[in-house]
Image (cartoon, rainbow, N blue to C red; front, side, top):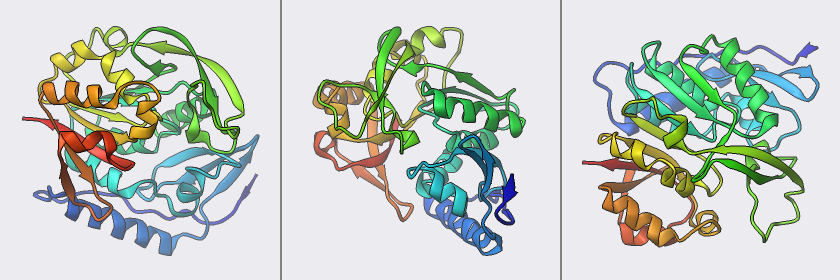
Length: 295
């Protein structure tokens, strides 16, 4: 094992009264830039295709070697989707209950585990064995096992098993296989599926759902109707890709259903602002990160 350099980092500790996403994004951005100036690498290869790095807020995270999706930004800079991180930190408070669909290697899981504190809890769903192993190691290494429950399954509309397809060079590409597939998704595997209403039947109200499930976000929500009903103050932070969603169902019907439940839609802009999106525009919206709120 050889350490490629130092791993200095800074922690994100919002000041009391700072609630705007813009100010939070400024803080996240300034902290990771400051951390980057103190870093000299920070990626440590452990062998067996696995490395470990420091996030910009000082948490250790295991990463898949050879991946050109999520690994480079975290390994070199300790960051991943800073605008999403800032919004999660703005929304979450100690003691909150969270469901994460598509936890991947756990960068945002770490962010949320810090934010909810020891009195909060996260249910993280991840079906892809390659990153599931790293997620478990990361949660254990950071001593978050008591506040993060990992579910080795895909959250969908029905329990059972489904075929997933993966690009071996992108650890975050695992998704529900569909008849028309790009040749690059050459890896196939069968994974277990659960309905959130069954997997979390013993849970009370949930405060936040974070989703990045490569087009199956709608199916996951359909399997969580009871959970949505008993969580009137629920906020959803999600990747939104109409093209990927349309391969699994009618996007217009999904939007109408969510709007009927009282959700309004806002896009998380790269500069930290939130832009209101009309329900009528949601089916044709370009790929984005969204916040959905009720009330």
